[in-house]
Image (cartoon, rainbow, N blue to C red):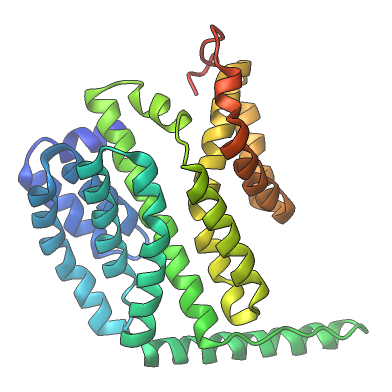
Length: 294
């Protein structure tokens, strides 16, 4: 189904425009629009991708005018920006690292342009937390306290979330490009994804500093380690290919990462170690891919 959608997007300018515009007008399917823009940008160039962004921006602008939420617009622009980096540099590592400044810029734009929207969102969320706290205290004997959120924390959460979706949309666009024009190429490129040692140390150090600075800054640590997390998945996929693990094993790894917070930090720690010892170079050999081609 996803390959069929990619084929439809690349069938012509108007097909691509239709997917880009329809997706951008939906808060639920904006990632499809973003991935379509990434695919066209990677395959046909920045001008063609920019043309799609201009038209897809119209429904996103309507959403912003109606709700005050700039999420759809930031997703489109962010994904396009990452796609331009990848298109011009032909370096997936550089595009992945670009997600950190993207998150920072998104947070700054949210704070400067959406102050009223953020304040209303924080007030609504804190009111819901207070009501939940009251309900839980009535049902049980133990007192429960939830920390109220502040505007900088919510801005960081939204900006980091936007950067995550933009990066995943870029990877989906890259996968589509490989599926259509270089079958198997995305898997090889993703499994080989590795960041410079200095960049890994810098991002891990930045995350630690942000965490130490307190609640208002702690949320930004997730943005700082976003590239490291993606590389962690690349390492896991590389090991699966090396050891002949299948989709079931990979699914278990994904589930563990989603449900267990300590696994997320172990993930990042493994990437920091990998920056110095290069696990994949040690695994290199005539082992072939897993039976599922992961």
